[in-house]
Image 1 (cartoon, helix red, strand yellow):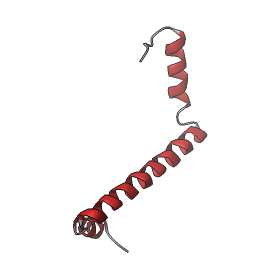
Image 2 (tube, rainbow, N blue to C red):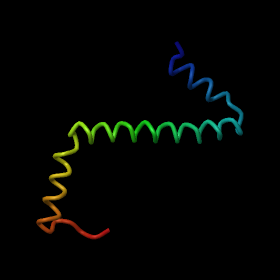
Image 3 (cartoon, rainbow, N blue to C red):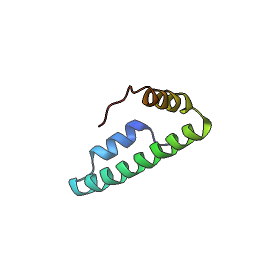
Length: 66
């Protein structure tokens, strides 16, 4: 199994063009992982309290336009 330290060392050895390609891939990979985590949290109800609080704040006029 590859350790984080081995991955870090391998990334550090990448030539510039490969580092750029890796960076682009990792940004997409990380965003997809975050999306999956967010969707699971929403499905499981973890975000319900926050959504209810936001809707209550809106109804009470405690919000400002962005």
